[in-house]
Length: 115
Image (cartoon, rainbow, N blue to C red; front, side, top):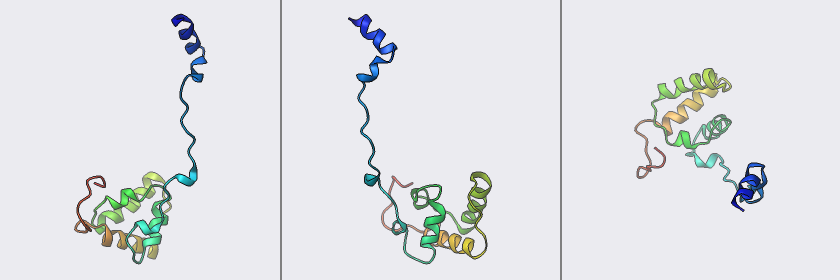
C-alpha cells in the first residue's frame, strides 16, 4: 500500500490529496487610500506617486531629512524606473515627506512594527 501511494505521489496523483488554498476574493483585500497619510498639501500627490510601486508602509516607517527624501526621488527614478518627479510636483512631494516623515516627526507612541 505504501509503495502504491508513493508511486501515485510521484506521478502527480498526490495533488488530489493536497489541500488547495482558498481563492482570494479581491473585494476582501485591504486597499489603501490617501487618508492613511497625514492630511495636508501634497497628501494625494505623495499617495498616488508612491503607491504606483509600493504601499504606504515603507513611507510611514521612514524618517528622513528633506535632502534624503529628495535624493531618494532620484534614486527611485534611476534604479527602479519611477517616472521622474520634476519642478513644482517634486518640491510638493519632497516637502510633504520631509514635513510629515522627517527625522524628528513622530506622532504618538513608537510602533515597533513600522520601524
